[in-house]
Length: 169
Image 1: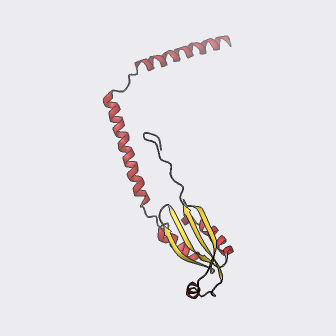
Image 2: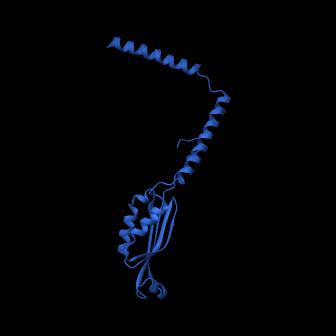
Image 3: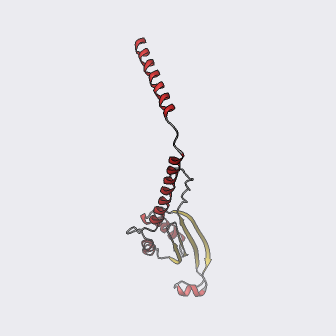
């Protein structure tokens, strides 16, 4: 055991001296090389920004805004009607009315779990009671004065944290 320890101690001392010798002989980068490295890092960051911008505009077959609108139109329950839809890459907002709030709950769950809504999280659901005006009731074939519920659904993508200058993504 003592012989093994002595052998390992000698090897450890040899390795430590080799490390010290390598550290002492390693000269810092010249200012020209440091400037070149910084220039290359800046170019890579600029190219990454361009790539991200190009990917945002990329059309993926079956996952375009029109596909999300088609999902909404195919899945609207009978007692629900829409008054507006706003959509972009990071936000999806639907407004309208319903005669049965329970139908709205099931519909919201179907939309939230659809693969087309991937990357968007259901951030806000606002439902409030609203009396239908006679003109609206006639246009939607509902009896005048019947209780309806207005709603707004907002699904937004979580913000992407900014990468500090010179930091790793």
